[in-house]
Image 1 (cartoon, rainbow, N blue to C red):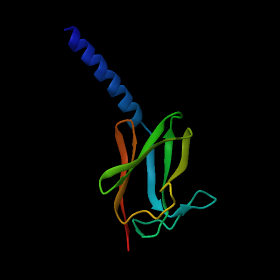
Image 2: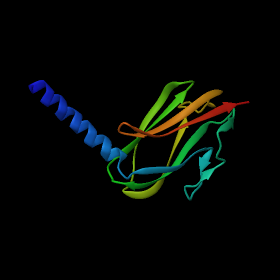
Image 3: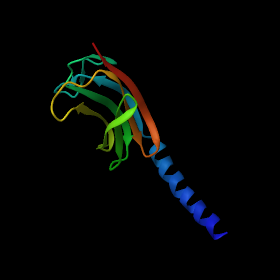
Length: 133
């Protein structure tokens, strides 16, 4: 009986945390682009990029952030994770961008990619893109 109570408490904690993440917070207009301009707007958005690109940026806007929470951004190349970062969001509404680039500044390899945005255990977006000829 004691084990069942502990299990229920753990499940309750997880459910409350998940509901907080899934609450009213929303992510909109997820785009991949070459860069963002000085007004934080995406430049050359798309899903297929030419080989030679040294960076790609993820841009999104959000609403009803509670402050202190961070969304997790995970980049994948050919289905394997290549980078993960937690981005802190300002409370309320706003926009955020995060760029993927290699440390040595070389072009990103050709192939299929995706980028996933999540908060706690809720995936808000999983966007595929490609770097080709």
